[in-house]
Image (cartoon, rainbow, N blue to C red; front, top):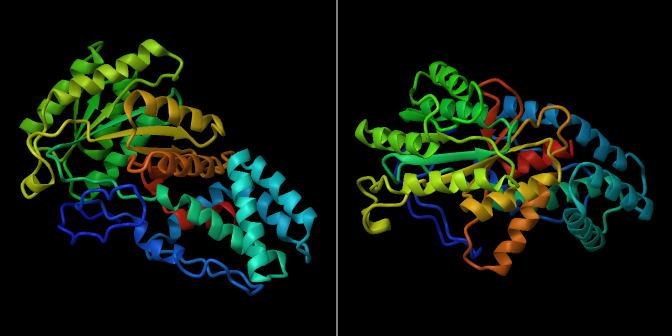
Length: 378
């Protein structure tokens, strides 16, 4: 699942204008990416096999269960025996009901129509296969590894609106990191919400990691103290929990910017063996993650845009994909990211590092585009 601090050979240069992440990365499930590049048009009327990586079976089962309502709704479109305009109209409605959004729905339908025409398939099940492939390819750029080890410590700042599951996601992420041998320090910089510090302390206790907190303290000062402590204690990761807020709360968004600026003053140097990747001390935070509630629907994209404008996000965590969440909004986010990359070559991506399907520690996992596409359309 994860592999810390192992030197990997340089990856070949991608065709995409977006630069590769550094070489020392947590080993995510991106190894399955080679499947995306297989035959994109299958001129047969049988389902494609669902490839699940070893050790991921239980997770994929949970994900499919969480997205069952959406999967059942979309799969119902393909129960007939003809490919006609009525099928495409039903598919359009089902995708829109799944929170896929108008733009992403149009994109996927255009891809499906084109490939159906080119391949000559005749059965609706083949259309479902083609849709699965089109969705997996659209989501593929969101599938990237979270880098740990280039900096000592790696500072990860986590933001999100109230109720998105931010603090819980930090606890689960801590579990991932600590279980793979990374030493983690938590910073309780959410000093606005009642009991936020106590909630994070509970997660620290469950994961047996240290925490820096200060009742009623300035969030930026707590963050700076935590990063400084992380340096002094030789921690691998410092996770900074910030107060939940809406993008429209301008004074609170400015507080986030202040935290980011203050953390940068701590001056984190690159780890041994990484000197060639850049000169001198690096500016923390090295990762700025936004936690999004999977039930938010199309408003999720508005959150991503607003927080990205304020903080320059480096990644996303999608939570609560376990019941009422429809999941299609990831297609909207992926299409936005693709269009943004085309408009501004070289712009860094905003990948989905993790998705969550429940409240347990193990209910947060790395994002895999093919797994998600198959679960959404199961």
